[in-house]
Amino acid sequence: MNLKTRVGLLAGAAALTLTGVSSADTATGQNNDELAQRLAAAEAKIAAMEAAQNQTWLTEQRATEIRGLVQDVLADADTRASLLQAGMTSGYDNGFVLGSSDANWLLRTNFLMQQRFNFNWQDDGPGIDTTRYGFENTRSKFIMSGNVVNPTWYYLVDINVGSGTGQTGTLNAYLGHDYGNGWKIQMGSMKLPFTREALVDDQFQLAVERTNIDSIFGGGYVDGLMVRYAGESLQFMGTFSDGFGTGQTPWQTLDTEFAITARGEYKFSGTWDQFKDFSNTKADESGVLLGAAIHFQNGENGTPATETDFVAFTADASLEFGGANLFGSVAFVDTETGTVDVSPFAIVLQGGFFITDNWELFGRLEWADFDVVGAEDLSIFTVGATRYFSGQNAKWTTDVGFGLEEVEVADPITAWRVDAPGQDGQVVLRTQLQILF
Image 1 (cartoon, rainbow, N blue to C red):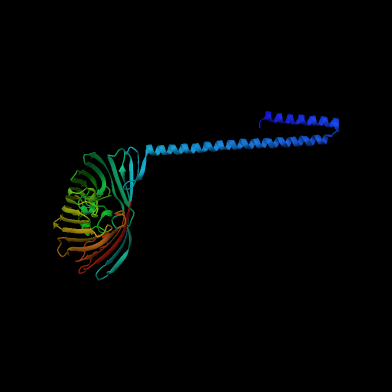
Image 2: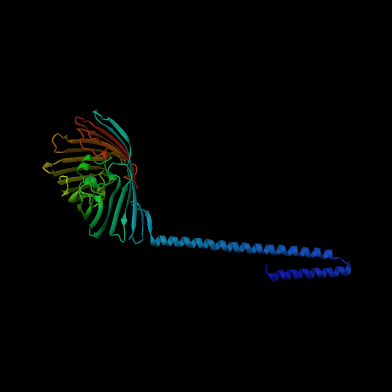
């Protein structure tokens, strides 16, 4: 209520009261107490009217303020939505993706976990704990890939925080440039393009783990520079590196003078994507892939240690057809250390087939002749099965391996142990649950 209205009401009330008083004085001679009572009643009425009007004003002001607040919130939400649509993209595309709308900046994250139980039985011998078993977080791997500046500049980093022997820490860590028409150049820590078994990622193996043969003849991770070409049917990879197993090492490490690797693959049928793993479901198409590689490594000169030079060859074939797969590889190394010259040779044969849409059975034989007097051949036979819950994203693999001869070379991640002379018949049981996203 404004001042003018209030004054008007008071004046009107006073006039009515005074008129009443004048009449009363003439007629009945009312005293001053009655006049005071009437004035008090008029003030009470005015106060009630003022309070009602103020309450209405406050209610209208509150509604106006709330409407303004809602409009501000909606405007802010619209602004954020517009920024999301115009400035970035997110979602799942073979991994969780975050990137700019123009595709110039992209981050894709993946995660691999392999939880494993290993059981090993070894023949009796002096100081031998015949039975060993336990659980292991073999791989808990974080994988980050994508591109920066524009889609032609790409990168990949993966870090394993699991406890798998020889497989922890940073593994791949490289960046590269795509020159178009299938040509790429990349530099950093990466898998040596030698054996196909090593080039197939951990999550896409047929058995629980790779063979002992691959740990002996494969090149592991290296620091170096790679040139790649991928066409419709032909793929080539050439690497200049620090040599076998030199990934994530300082530049001044005493390893090799130089190492050169070249690998070629020819695809007669199928797609490149289907050969990223060893399995072939009933829904997949047939395919044939042949590969071969050569590696030359010159040992470090000018050191007290005897220089070691070697040349390594490998060839492999992958066949996939209607729910079944076959893979075979051979590897040969000619190694010279001073006057000692040895030429080990190895073979791997494996295959699998789906008995249902979700169950796959497989078998594998690995054999090697180390060309060392008195050394037994490596001979291991493995059989197993995989239950696929959601393809390679969720699966459970179990296998059992039998050592047909003494196992004189073994990679701990395979769960095999080195036998003492005269021991044989080693048995390994492995079961692994895997998730990948």
